[in-house]
Amino acid sequence: MSAFLPVLRVTLAKDMRLEWRSKDAINSMLFFALLVVVIFSFSFDLTAEESRRIAGGLVWVALLFAAVVALNQTWARELRNQVLDAYRVSPAPAESLFLAKAIGNFLFVIILVALMTPLFVVFYDLRSVGPAYQLVFAAVLGTWALVVNGTFFAAMSIRTRSREVMLPLLLFPISIPALLAMVAATTAILTGDNSPYLSLVFLAVYDIVFTIVGFFLFETVLHAE
Amino acid sequence: MKSAFSIFALITLALLSYGLYQGLIVAPREMTMGDVQRIFYYHVPSAWTAFLCFFANLVASIWYLATREPKADAIALSTAEVGVVFCTVVLVTGPIWAKPIWGIWWTWDARLTSTLVLWLIYVSYLLLRRYSTAGQNPVLASVLAIFGAVDVVFVYMAIRWFRTQHPQPVVGGGEGSGIDPRMMNALLMNWVGFLGLALLVIWLRYKLERLRQQVEEAHAMRAIAGAKGVAR
Image 1 (tube, rainbow over the protein chains, first blue to last red):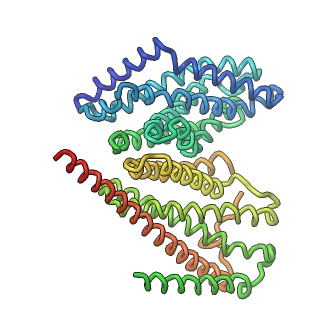
Image 2 (cartoon, each protein chain N blue to C red; image 1 turned 30 degrees about the vertical axis):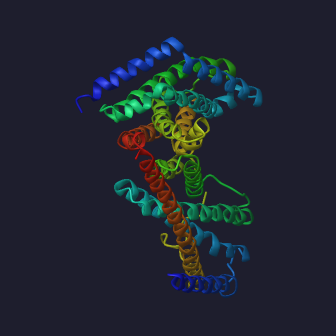
Image 3 (cartoon, rainbow over the protein chains, first blue to last red; image 1 turned 90 degrees about the vertical axis):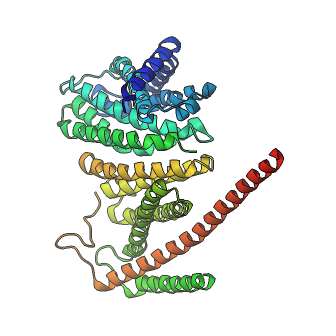
């Protein structure tokens, strides 16, 4: 276990440096999310009141789709030059690799959230009725819920024949309860109708449970022959 | 073994016919819902059977991860496939029943949604099995089964808290619940029949999967033997 933190740190630093130089994930995610926002706003012609009610759903659906773009690249990157095989034979703990990837993806997606929020405000004329700072909790907990499972299932889908297609097929059904809670929390905050407390607690529990499950099962998936 | 299977198949057939008779003829007409209610004898037993199949799949998946026993994987695969079929029956009969009674085909209540999500998870499970290569397929599938089981708990809670219309449990619910004994009899008979049918198909599917595994193993052994021969 002594190698846990160093491996985590090195892997995360490597991924960040790669992303900083190539900006592959963030560029494609950002443009994809922008397209989704624009298409949604074309598809529904909304008043400010209506958009406040459904924006929670729109934001998270856009994020879910956009996150898949980045998540698919997480492990695809390691397939080149057989890096993933090298991980497999190295004594580095698999769990730290998983956490490093999850944290990396979390950072990408949270940056995306930060950049998309103004877009939503502009396109949907949004103004929060409830305390807007609470949106930060919803964003952080919700993003982690998407990313921790996404990172795990990306590692699974990369082992299948139809790599990129498989990830959403695995991730979306599992993410349904998290999505419900994210949308409930965001809508509660935006409309100010009720307290988002329950959905935030739900999300936190979801995050903790799936982080633990992913953490302990990752090695099995990495070493699946 | 063959005769055991035939006897079991005959018993199942008899049970299913008896269940059909009980459900359509013997069980009384429901007071408010009328004859539409008779779909209940198919809807509920299918649901119970599907859930049992998925539960068996979870147990077999954990068993496989713990021991890497190919038999466990064959059980996991066959129960998942049969579970998806019964779950599909539930999801089709549900709306047919709901439309004349509730006036809508579908509502997002806890049990409907949990069943739908469970179905989605197991369809993705079957897709994963289909698209992964033979060797790693059982491991990945077992892991997904565990994720799915954990997820269903969350789905149920999420719907109860964040969305809320299904009748309260009629069988085994609180006070005021309960049904005519003849209805109960028809329900249980059908359930036993359905369970028998499910076991029958699982049995066949299991045998088929075991054969496939053995053929694959024989091919691998032969390849190894061939490689040794060349090396010599």
